[in-house]
Length: 255
Image (cartoon, rainbow, N blue to C red; front, side):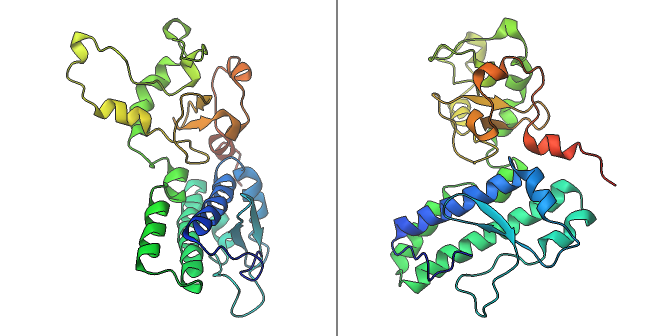
């Protein structure tokens, strides 16, 4: 493991950067790389933990041997519950424990290097601006995910496609707020604009940006950065029904 003796972020910004890196790695394990994560969590093995590292990679491994460990340890034995629960419930459980571990590591560094009340508050505020891993895994990060339902239906209709500011067809993009509203839209307020702006990637949990390529899963209706799920705009044009890695893995036959 990358113990505290090897890597010690000492400022609020460094601890937050460490938090984001570990979080990104764990989100990969539970979303875009979930098939590999599932296979590594073999219930026949010993107690295993899910680790996230500042370099945005993840690892399933045994806990640290030293007592006490250099860093707080993740939840132990996540592999034992794998076959006793529905996939979605198991991933949600691991996500919750992962969120708790990330906070414990961040505030461990804060305590170790003497963060005062103001620093701790600033660190928590920065962390709290990001959706939790649980929210990313379950698609509840923002209420705007629900608002995408109607746009998801229309994205497969080529007659209704519109081009965005980059000239790309927007059938794989979260629709931007309309610049001009018709008379029958006068009842809509700024909340619609906010919802579009709050769309989050189901893989990395980051916000939607108009200059990035996105694609929506036709099953769970979550939006993803194309780069996060390894889908290019050219490839997307030939996909009739896109299924994200999580939905694809959930379709496998279970014993």
